[in-house]
Length: 77
Image (tube, rainbow, N blue to C red):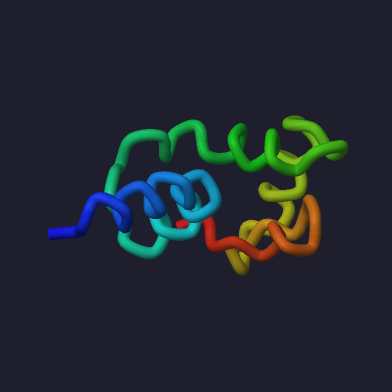
């Protein structure tokens, strides 16, 4: 088991880690329906609809190319 301190650190990092970890381990099927909307939200100025269109256009290699450079190219799962 984690010690208390380690557990708290994990909680603090959870927001940053959440998206990457969920896609890698495929923990929950929940939220997959709304994933395009979520990614669109994270894309900042692009907005949901624009980001959604980008994803549809880019369906062949299943990657999202919008948003900040650090958030780009996430697998869609």
